[in-house]
Amino acid sequence: MADLVVLYKMPTDPAAFDKYYYETHVPLAKKMPGLRKYTVTKGPIMTPGGPSPLHLIATLTFDSMAAIGAARASPEGQAAAADVAKFATGGADVHFAETAVV
Image 1 (cartoon, rainbow, N blue to C red):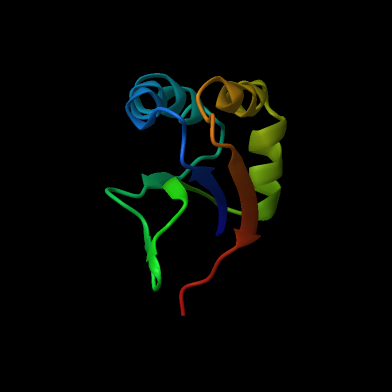
Image 2: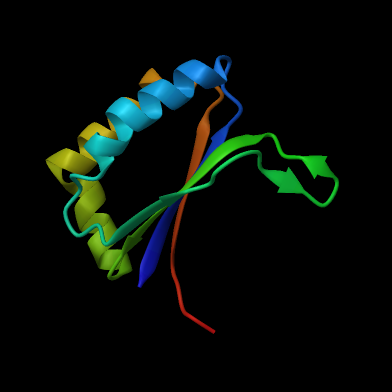
């Protein structure tokens, strides 16, 4: 398995971010080929020192790194990537890696 993880930093308008994210971006991203699971954080994100500068963490699970690459290269993946600039006013970091259950 492999995960694509998006760390969304605190947006200028969290309510507007949430509305757009759930109503527009999630349905768009769920069209990416090979997507097996899509999870997001719920509620405030915390660190050992207190509140995090992150607003939301999304984890998209695929069968492999190759499947992530194919999804990102697809028209649906390109559309989802281009959409991020429309709502992630605080910025977003994207990471992907193979995963294992230990």
